[in-house]
Image (cartoon, rainbow, N blue to C red; front, top):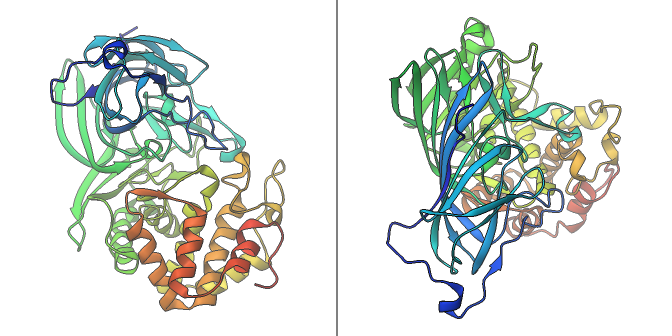
Length: 474
């Protein structure tokens, strides 16, 4: 077995000596093992804020073993005696903080507790390096319709579906959307395979029968949006009419599929047109990663809005491209503050599907909303009924219930109808501008909607978002 990857949390470029607690005369305390998200209390960690990750991994599809080195640069937000990273079941070989060996302990399946050789004062920029290895273990849960998620092996490589807490299956992190950071992703694979990730491809080299791909995302990104698709891909590049760099990767097995062939063109069109309506596209790159994973062993039909380049597990239809590209504004740039706010991601993306059809010769968004209001989509046997879900607080297991998508979209269309197009689109543009690269909540959206519209929308939001039942008046 290869030696595992190394994760490094790096203290700043300045040579600042570590101040011991005794010398400083201050008290150092452990960072919290969690960020208090009521649905995922153990996701993320307190006491520091990550600025940058460098993920260096080597993946062998034959053995499914992943090894690598991750370097994390972070700032202490308190006087830290110890802190945690999220890493699910992987074998940790060593940890260093600011170049010195640190003690570490696994506390549960996903917590890596790290104690540096000296305390880290508040505001201190520091680095951690963790070496680890193993076969990444996927997660499962009813909130993704029992699909596996995390780092997933495919027939010839791998795919990543990190939402909501699956980043920890393959790299140490502060795995919660409120701690966004910049990323460099270096992936080594057997020669002949390609590794497609986020941002721009800034380097590529070959050595010893292996190929390495170096990607850089220079806009803040949540951990669950990191991609690392490995396989036999046909890759094409272009530039949109707005000057946005575009890279599309299509699994060679579906290279002749009509939907796969159409995805790059649709991506260009959707990226530019949504930018005209919602405000400038928030990232430096766009594109797509199209897999052929809707067959055994994965049987995945899903997609994920991996930042700057959505990952489709099978060739998408037009509404699917509109949905995932819209997430670049609603979910990726403006991310949820807590996972109970997921409707802000999925409701917007569903509404954009309807709006896209409205703008391109299909039914109006109002007609689409009315159709699903009259005939809601079926729910799975183990899920609550469509109208029984509280959209803005659905419980952990129902954050991806169909009600979150469809009733979220209906709520937005009802809001559009109530306040009018001028106020509605002003609200949307203001929303994405004010919270760009940040996080926001349902309460933030409600407050802004009332400010922009000049209307008291308390009853409206209570009916559509905060109570179960089919709305009949608002």
